[in-house]
Image (cartoon, rainbow, N blue to C red; front, side, top):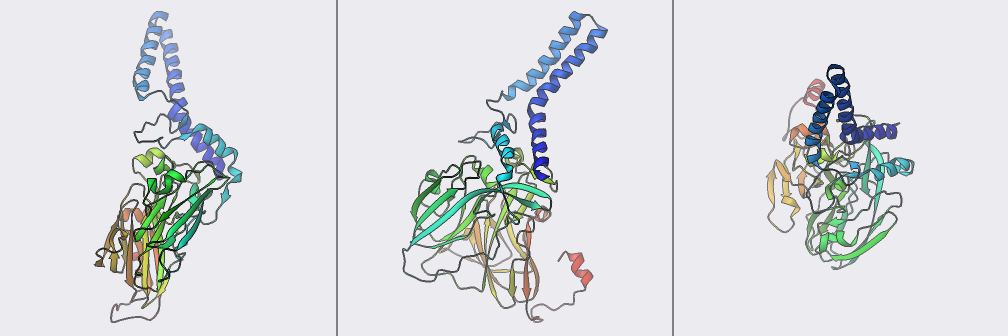
Length: 415
């Protein structure tokens, strides 16, 4: 049972990082005392015991005595809010109520799930948006279970689409089954915390606010309840597109992809319920780097035909790494760098940089049928899950690409 495996995994970390260390040192000191008592007088043995245990305290206590029992044990951070530790009471509450968490068969938001373009309706519309923060269980990879924290039950959350000048009324509800408080910070918002200051919601509560979409562009949104990085490393992010008053050039297909990092206590591929290792997060040592929440998250979900113009809305939920977005076998005809709309665009781009908490928009026309692999061109990350396939069907175009591929060639190339 994955939940039981996860419980024992966490207990192991809590024990060895905290209580187990102290008990082990005490047991070692007692053992040394017994051995020395056999070889020396009681007075000498007692003196050496004190020296042994004193040396342990000398190296152990400078790390500080924790003011709360939490995982990881004795973690010290210097941010403006609580560090990314998990109080022991939350651990107990999680496993006591684990049967109440929704099991999601596929955590990945479908990359084709993109709202339709808005056209050129009257400016300054009132737009209603409702989102629900929900903590769920789902697989990162076969047999690898994670407690995801989500917007609307997927990673990323839904893509939102409004128009420059719209007045947006956003309501955030925290599902009653959640264990933690949540909030939302939209990078498209001009105002305190991007909305996070007024949307801090306890389980079962709702909060709302209104904002004017002043600037066109593609913007990340994410949970901003402390510890912000910890909430995002559980999958709490998405994107909102603020369309300009003059719409972007039309395309045939639009896709929504977000890269994210997951820091599990178990090594990549370890089965069972995996807890988030915040020390790995602070060291930027991700076990999984994936598109749309899990390994294979966008595979089998992106298709196009030759001659079609494709647009990818690409975001980076981070929390640490810059992404190098690249489509193997294609060249981006137009890139809106850092998802800026209204500024200069780039033409004929091979790879574009997407910072953590940032985005990019890339347009290209597919001329030749085949499998086109979207990657982070920091290519070691492919083996951690950062890849997905665009399947293109249609007529061959030998004027553009003319080759005979054997089946063995396809296998050897990984395509």
